[in-house]
Image 1 (cartoon, rainbow, N blue to C red):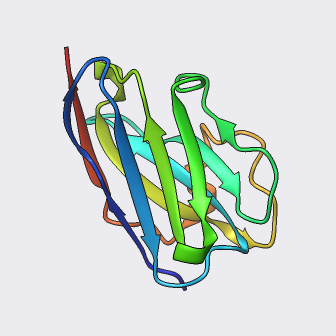
Image 2 (spheres, one colour):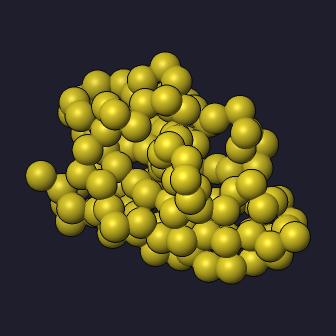
Image 3 (tube, one colour):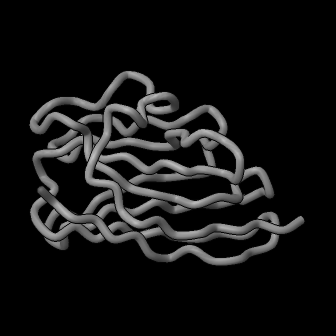
Length: 129
């Protein structure tokens, strides 16, 4: 199994940007990979996913136009560029792999957390108004 380590979180003011990284212990090229977040007292929700063999990324409605998911297969690393952050984006951010390899991502990432595995430890994002 691949191990994932997230980094890049921090505290920013509303309107700011952050870039999260997810470093994998091995090749990610055969996985659908996703970014998820969990606010205090709320369920974990998916924000973005990408099939590392190709295909269009998918985003939750709440982050469309503001977040961009990307990958660097040579570095075994997944990224999440987050722009125009607002306080509602505050939470712990995690990356994970889809439970099946060599399979396209689920149609909707928003509610797909239960279908992902190999969770990292998370990186905290705090956005102040």
